[in-house]
Image (cartoon, rainbow, N blue to C red; front, top):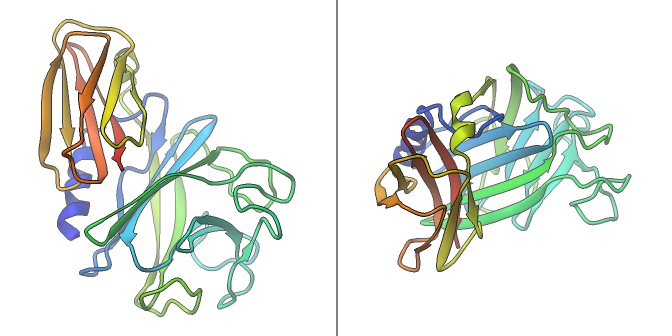
Length: 266
């Protein structure tokens, strides 16, 4: 798994990701063999996207804007079924849920919080992608900023296999601070859309414009190139029925710009 996370970091170091989006890039939280844990946060003015990559058989947690289990602050936990939006009580206490008694995608005032967009397990590694409004308006939710800033993060994972929210142990938690930086502004001229995403048998790439020689390259989580094509049409479909399930990076390059987006194969 260490090789996987490092390969992802190499891909994202192109600094050519999402137009008008601020990102942490892929951040390796833990490189413990077999228990590697990485996350990425992408923020634009309307939507925040969280990617969590870790062991498929343990709960995963991430606290925003904190360096410890600070009472009342925002934390999310993947509990084996979905991403639950929670808040810290006192240190050592199981974090409480924002949405007591109602679906975990809504908070107590009816605002939508984290919605899981994809949840793929491949070779023992879970890749979870979830989104929420950048500002939900709920008092327990961290307010993400679509600006060049920094964010404090506290993370944890289960001490043993399973999803019971017991003490994580001293070797399964940590804190960090990461900068949110803007992608290359030129990529807006080469914007594209992937549909559907996730997909099982095929996906379609819709280009905003077709600028001269335009190529599409696709990389798997190990950084291996699995596809390379010249694009001659604004809209083109691609067969992926033989691909392994998991997360891929699709890179579109034209004469003046490059953009990359994530794609999930079910």
